[in-house]
Every structure is written in structure tokens, then in C-alpha cells.
Length: 384
Image (cartoon, rainbow, N blue to C red; front, side):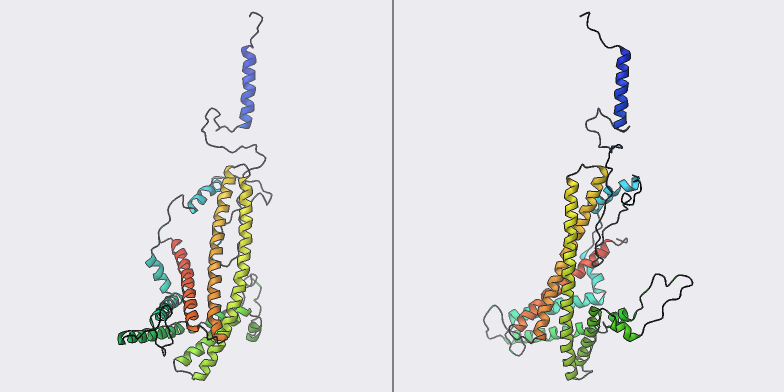
């Protein structure tokens, strides 16, 4: 036992000093190695600092734009981890509903804002009009009213039922005229788009004169085809409406109505192409974000990468919502295409039934889109 030598206190203290220096070089001052439950800290010597959240480019179509974050790593600047930058995680949590609850928007408030616009009133009257037509399909067997029973065999109706059917038929026709009057002069919007001069960024600079205005014919020849179709369709609808009101001749109104149907058919086809291309773009963006999220889950989770993952999840949620409403728009356009095809190609088979159900489906889908738009605006309003 006497031959065993113990390390002196000086060597032990030097060894402890070296160990503490190496530990302090690896761990930050706030790290407590003795505590197994201490919070996770960022390693200042890590080769891969926390990634700045990035978002994909979303097309400016619908209403759903993702938040933008400054990416200083891509610009070659040294990233600065301030409190504002590290608070992205808290902001993302609040966006997902983990933080402060958003104010609830009542249904009556949304309908109040919706009916305050001419488009909202048109959708409300369209819902009422085609609901009455569906009711007439299932309840009426009056031949001269243009409706037939769908689910049960015709039977002899009482005078009260016949009078109710006539009143409902008159109401549906009156709602159709009211809707046509409500959308009068809609051609002003595409006309303003065609004739309005394009604002150039250098036109307001000092000492630079704006270019001279182009002739009106030049503006019409270089206008986008969808805008021209919208202009012609609105003008034809107005002529047809004035004819039904008795202001113009019946023959002119019928020709204008048929021309309006063909322009509506072309406009619907163009809209279907645009929505299909936009759906493909959004699907590509969703695939990119999902791939980025998968790669993030395979890497080491740090404070910055967690904030980036939450930002990508938020963007993925917005993209999926945008894809959902694009699908709703696509179905609505298909319903409109079926409806107007019966008028353009003069299809007689099951005309009333098909037009009634496709019109009701289009009314429900368009009203849902408009309701969602007003609900989103009210939920973001600071007055709530």
C-alpha cells in the first residue's frame, strides 16, 4: 500500500482546470450540465446555424399570401439572432391557434357585409330562386308552368296546390328579372380596365413626362381576351334585360340573349383553363413544401429549424386551403358550363331538371366562396 502514489492536489487542480476550460469552450455559460432537465440551448460552435425560414412564391390570385421572412444567409450576410428573429416560433404558434384566441365572427355579421354588396345580394337571390325551382320540380305537375314531377307520379292536384305552384313560378321569374337588373352596367368594370392607362414606375419621376395616351382602338386591340369577352357578355346581357323590361324589341332581345350565352360559354371555358393551370401550380408548391418539411424532420432540431418548420407548416396550410377553393371554383365553372350548354346547343332532354340542379349547385358554391371571403376580411379586421 505504501507503494501506491496518489496524484497531488496541484495536478488534480490543473486537470480540473483543463476539464473546465474545455467544457466552457463547448457549452455556453447558461448551460448547466448537472441539470438533466435544463432547456435546450443553441451551440455557438455549431457548423450549421439555425436555418432562416423560407417560403415559396405563391401566385397572386386568390387572396392567400404567405408571410415573408428575410433570408440573410442567402445574401452572404452574417445572421444575427435577435429577439425579433427568434420570436418567429411564437408568432407561428399564435397563427396555428396555440397562442391568443382570435375573435369569433358571427354569421349575421358576415351576411350583413355580404348583402351590402350587389354581388352578395345577387347570390342571395340566386339561392332563393333556384331553391324555389327545385321545390317546383318535386311538387308540381302543371304542364304550362314548365315544371314536372321528378320522384313521384303525377296526380290530380287541388286548386290550392295549383295556385301555390303558379305563385312560386311567378316568384322565380320575378327573382330572375331582379337579378338581371341588379347586374346592369357591369360592363363598366372591363371597359375601365381596357381604357385605363398603365401606370409606369418612371412616370412620376421628376423631369420625365408620361407617355402620350394611346388611341381607344389600340387599347381594345391589345386588351386581354377574357376582359373583352366579359365586356361583350355584359353588354349583351344588358340589351336582353332591357328587352325583357319592354324598353327594346323582343327580337333584338332574343338575339342579344343568345349572343350573351355564347360569350358566357367562351368565358367559362377560359376560366376553366386558368383554374386548371393555377391548380397545377399550387400542387407543385405543395409538393415542394412537403419535401422541405420531410428534409427538416430528418435534420437536427434547433431553435431556428423549429421556427422554420412551423413557418413551412403554416405555408402548407395556406396552400392546401387555396387548393381547396380552386377546386370549388373548378366545380362551379363546370356547373356553369353544363347550364349554358343547354342554351347554346338547344338541348331539350331533361332541360329543366338539369338547369335547375346545376344552377342551384353553382349558387351554393359561389355563395360559399363569397361568404368565406367576407369572413376572412372580418376576422382580420382590427375593430373586432
